[in-house]
Image (cartoon, rainbow, N blue to C red; front, top):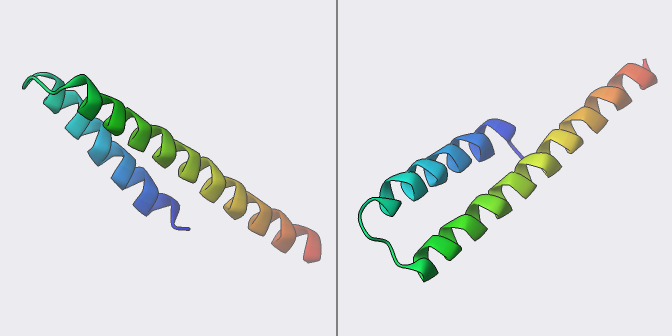
Length: 62
């Protein structure tokens, strides 16, 4: 997973969530967007952990 891509997507979804709130978004749409943000955050954590495990493997392996 590419950390940069996930982070950009997460920022875009947050911006969309922030601006949609001002235009009268329904609670269902708000819940879906919040769920998407949580999913994106989870994917970001997984991607960072994978990158760290890769770097530790490279350092440990010599």
